Image: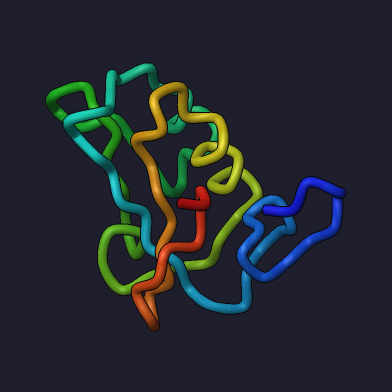
Amino acid sequence: MTGSGGATEADPAAGPAAEPVLVRVDLDRCIGSGMCALSAPGSLALGPEGQALAVAGYADGGAELTDGLAEAVEFCPVEALTLHSARGGHRIAPPD
């Protein structure tokens, strides 16, 4: 992400990306706050253990990056969520 307000391809706050994305959840970090499921209900849910779970194409195959999903990743209180390119596998957000 850029600090000057400019958008780059790797900036999830820039809006939907041209390439499909996958969401990965670090279950060792996830505390089940539920903020992600509230921000992006079509992309994330709370699983049976109360932790974040990527749904539909976001878990396998990739789907469109939405503003809600970008916010969910950005605002996860324990940084348990990461976005990756479904095509190349590289990490999109948050930055390393």
